[in-house]
Image (cartoon, protein in one colour):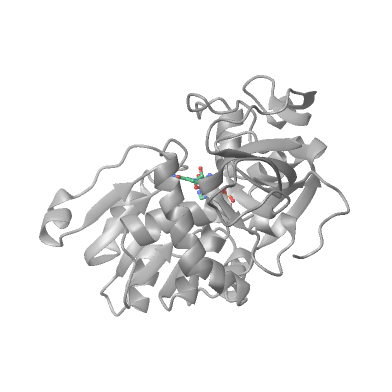
Length: 333
Ligand SMILES: NC(=O)c1ccc[n+]([C@@H]2O[C@H](COP(=O)([O-])OP(=O)(O)OC[C@H]3O[C@@H](n4cnc5c(N)ncnc54)[C@H](OP(=O)(O)O)[C@@H]3O)[C@@H](O)[C@H]2O)c1
C-alpha cells in the first residue's frame, strides 16, 4: 500500500512517500480503506522525534481516519463490512489502509463527507476526555479554551457551547478571535494585545472560570490559576510554551483548585471505547443536528503530507488540516 513515513526526525521534508505491507489485524481490529486522514499537532511532534510511538503501534504517522471497513470481525457491533466509519487509531493513518480497534470506530455522522468525518476523532476524544470527564464541565460551568483556533480549540468551543456553557477563548490574532466567536465563543481574547486574566475576570464579574483547557503550560499556569473560580479545574493537554512553572500552592489549598492533565494516545482500548460510546450518545446527535460542525482549513493529497505539516507549523490555520487519500469520492453520507 502507499503510505507516508517519517524517514528520520526533522523538518517536514523528512516525510516521504513509501510502499509498505498491508496492516496485519490483531484481535478486535478492523481494516479500513482510508478515504481521508487528519493531521494533528502530535504528528508534528512525532515527526520531530519528540513523541515516542507506543509499543505495538504503527511507526507511520496519523491518529485519525475515515473510510470503508473492508475486513475484520464486526460481529456484535453496529457495523458491517462496507460501512463508512471514522476511527481513532494508534498510528498509521497516513496510508491507503489502516487497522483500527472496532470499539474506536464511530459511524460517519449523517451529512458529513469522509474528509469532514476524518477530522473528528482525535480532537473529539481528547476534548471529551479532558473537559467533560477529567475537568467535569457540567451544569452552568464556564470554560476558557486556550488556542481557540487549533483543531482542539474549535472542537472544545463548539462542544461546550452546544451543551449550553459560556465559553471564552484565546487566539493569537484578531482574525482568529473573530473565527472563535463565529464558532460560538461568547468572547475571544487576542493574547498578544490583551491580558487574558484581566479579560476573563472582567467577563465573569471577578469570579473567574470553572474550567480552563490549556495546551500552552509554562508561564500560563500561574496566570490560569489566577483566572480560575473557586473549585475551578485546570486541564492540561500539551506544553507548547514549556514544561516548568512556579505556582502559588496557597491558591490551590484556599480555593480548592484541581490541576490535572493527560495524554490520550497511550491509554487502553477499553478507555477509548468508553469515550467513543459517550461521543456516540452525547455528541454525534449534535453534529447530525448541525449544532457542531467540522472546521476544515485545507485539504492536501496524501503525497503532500510534508506541505500539510509545514502549514500546521506556520500556525496560520483555523481548524483542521486534512489529507485526502481517495480522490473524487467525497460525497456527503
Ligand atoms: N493530551 C492529549 O491527549 C492531546 C491530544 C491531541 C492534541 N494534543 C495537543 O493539543 C495541542 C493542539 O493540537 P492541535 O492538533 O489542535 O494543534 P494545532 O491545530 O496546530 O494548534 C496549535 C495552536 O496553538 C497555538 N499556540 C499557542 N502557543 C503556541 C506555541 N508556543 N507554539 C505553537 N502554537 C502555539 C497556536 O495558535 P495561536 O496562533 O492562536 O497562538 C496554534 O494554532 C497540541 O499541542 C497537541 O500536541 C494533546
